[in-house]
Image (cartoon, rainbow, N blue to C red; front, side, top):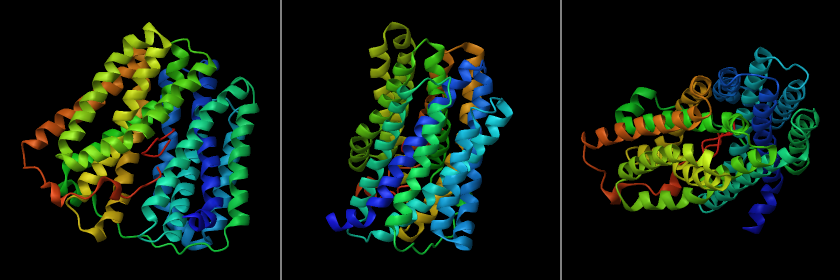
Length: 407
C-alpha cells in the first residue's frame, strides 16, 4: 500500500487542494452575495450555473483529453477555474456570477474526470477499492478544510477569493512535477437513460432527486446561514458538520443495504432525511448546537442515497455495464442538480429561511413515496444476487460531487 501511495501522492494532494478551493468558493459566494443584497431567488439561479457547466463538461471533457492529453487539459482547466474565482469580487453582478459559476462547474467536472482516470490507471483489481477509499477521504478532507478557511478573512474583501485561486493553482504543481506518465483514457459507451429506467426506475429517480437535494444544500447553505443570523465562523461549522456527517454515515448505511432489501434502506433514508429536515426548522431557531446536530444527521442519511441508487442499479446489471451506467447516472445527477438551487432559492425567497429545509424535506418525501410505490411493483432482489455496496463505481461529481457536492 505504501508503494501505491508513493505513486499517487501528487494526485491525492492535488485533489485535496482542488476540493478545498471548491468548498470555500461555494460558501464564500453565498455570503458575499448576501452582503451584496442578492435575494435568495437570485442566488439560487446564480449557483445553479455551476451545474450547467458541470453537465456540459461531463460530455466534452473526454474529447478534450483525447485531443490534448490529461496533463495539459488539467492545467488549462485549473487556470480557468482560478481566473473565474478572481473575477468574482471584481464583477459583483448576478449575470456575471452565473457565467463564472458555469465556467467553474465546467472546470471542476473536468478536473474530477481526469483525476479519477488517473486513480483507475494507478490501481489494479486488488488495490482499487482501497485507493478509491483514500481518494474519497482526500475529497472530504479538502471540503472540510475549505469550509474552515472561511474564517481566514472577511467575505466582503477579495482575500478569500485569492485563497481559492491559490489553492487551485497550487494543486497543479504536484501533479505536473510528480506524475511521470499520464494514463490512457478510454471512455465507455454510455448505457442509455431509457435502458437504465427500465432496469430500475427507483435508482434513476433516486439519483435525480439526490442531485436536486445535494446541489441545493451545498449551494445555498451559506445563504441560509446568513439569513438566520449566523456569523462566518458558525456558517463554516454548519457546512463542516454536513461534510463530516455525510462521510461518517456513508459506510454504515451502505453496509446495512448489503444485508437488507436495498430499496427498504433507500426508502428509510429518504423518509428519515425528510423528517430530520423538518426538525431542523425549529432547531434553527432553538439553538446553534441543535442545528449542527440536525445537519450532521441529515447529511449522513441523505448523502448515501446517491450511492445506494448506484448500487441498486448495479444489482440488475452485468459487470461490464456498471462503469457505463455510472456515467449515465452522473448526467442524471447533473440534470437534477441544475434545478436544485434555483427552485430552492425561489422557495427561500417566498417563505424565508424555513424554505431551505422545507425544500429538502419535500424532495426526500417525494422520493420516499415513489420508493414505496416501486416496492409494490416487483419483489426484492435476492440478497445473494446484490453487489456489495463498496463495489458501486465511485464518481467525483459536487460539491459538488455526489459524495459531497459543493455547488
